[in-house]
Length: 314
Image (cartoon, rainbow, N blue to C red; front, side, top):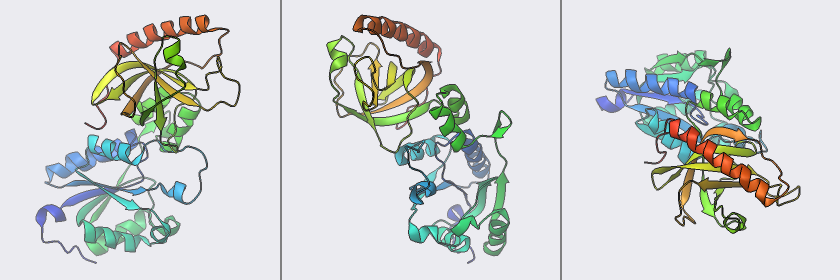
């Protein structure tokens, strides 16, 4: 199918296609080229993605996996340069499409003149649409394909799978370096067991999407984003071994420094800046409180000198 649009602005669109889980620094490299170079040629920058993630739909994952929810991903794609975002529902019929059928469908939706893809990108049933197949489709349909090289860290390409592994291993610093921003967890503030308020340390209990990968158990310096404002916080992730036996449900609790508002049922975005320590079991509440006060001083100092991340949804 030839490019059918007579609308110059629409026909000159540049697009990129990918899962973009986490919209990490490697993805951002593609988006910068898409946005900067495309705009120099008066082109729209369009990011095309899928929901759910193909690996999730195909049953290749069992545990919390996603680095970004659908809403987080769209907000991040816009932050890093996409003018428009198109999300295709990845279902059984979609997974069986040939590259040609998908590109034809995409061209009818948003005619484009340039396709930017990552070095390892493949499209279509059985991942049959590699660089050669897509370039051939480009020759047939009147668009150019540009392959963007990997962004490297520690002699390996930055990837979503490496970031997941770093988070699982507790290496937030490495994960954040590969992301290019502090890792994000979004969730609703829900009622907990009230223990924090009882011991004089009120916390916001966060309920994230069940498929969202949260950092490993520990205590973190983070910004809590509420109603578009960032608040320095100490975030604890784990099983509260001082109070509960093994097998307790994992919790995410944010103690927002110098903050006293009621925020139940509000959506909160946690921006994880630095891991302070591992989760520990204390002999009594006094020992726990002593450590928490030190964590608060430490977090306040770190966050006072940290670059504030942009608000996610504003």
